[in-house]
Length: 456
Image 1 (cartoon, rainbow, N blue to C red):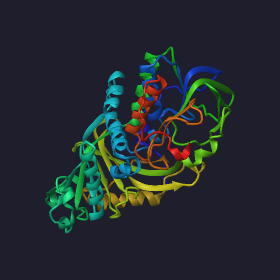
Image 2: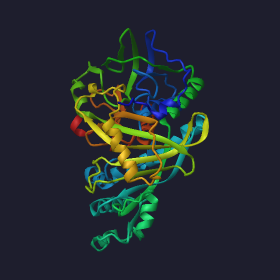
Image 3: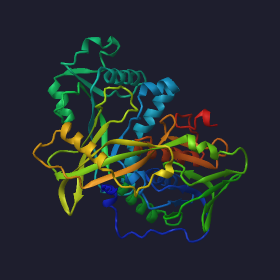
Image 4: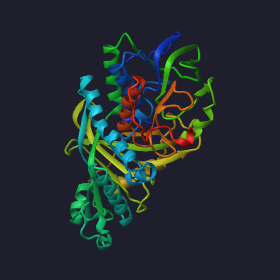
């Protein structure tokens, strides 16, 4: 059995001291969770308000999903844009999509303000489609994106695809026809099962290292009104009128607002003293899925890339797929390496309590990823692949696959920026800015990220 060994945590500072809460604290804002969502929320609140911020983390900074992800930065949802239009209408769906795409600039803002020099690559990423149904699904998404005034995704269909004549004339301006070899070349595969390629802006970054560096910047710039307490689990949150009391076992934190930036609600009981109980809703808001990834290093002879491979011809976006990221990686002091990360296998959890980062990585999963690399990704068949990293992470999925960003309807002292839904970096960063606007009492439009009516 292999260990959970993340390449992102491997790059964090080994000498940083992790301090827990040692006394009772009073603050304006308490943030629970020190991953990408918590760090982004703290950044924008500290920059755009005068509030004091205390962040608490049950383990260590960025050691949850942020330190156990695939490292991809993408601006799409793990459900089609057309389905967002069906659920929310064109205007709200378009606003939500723009919000996530605008988070590229918010990420730049964090990167620039903190003066970071860590690797952050952007490029045209790709997704391989293997069926007519998948192609039609994405052309339909493009159709509605164009209606909404959004940029469309580039779609190239192989001229050898036997369904070209079946594509509706409604989609004629939303794709181009190319050679099968062009499709396979973009996907870096020799597997002829792929009949089309979808391309859009993507990126890759070590989000754990990003969080650590932004945290150190915040600690220095806002030393008079920012603190992080790691190794500090919050077991209970009591919501009052205008304030909240957080139980950190031997100490307490009193805050005017508390913001949940976790992947779920494991181990936290919320008591609302001013109205209806909201604790029972938690088990329905977020469910857990464990994603498994493996990585190996090779000499840096290709540019960064992110590619998804939809090997199952079923068009459903919820179906598991393989994804690959290639990026620059400093390994063993040598700066001439690429890290090739591959993920895909997933396990749905009925109970978050069953998950632990300490769980071993099964040989069965390792073999599944190894088979994918050797059968799909275009590698030298004579080269032995040695996976130096094998890791897994818990992804929190909301019921409708949309991040929750905003106040709890039954008591606005509690706010949310949670639910990675498999793709978390840009939505988390946008969530931090939206929460900052809400805290500063700016006018904020109705959004697809609001707590759904069925939870109210």
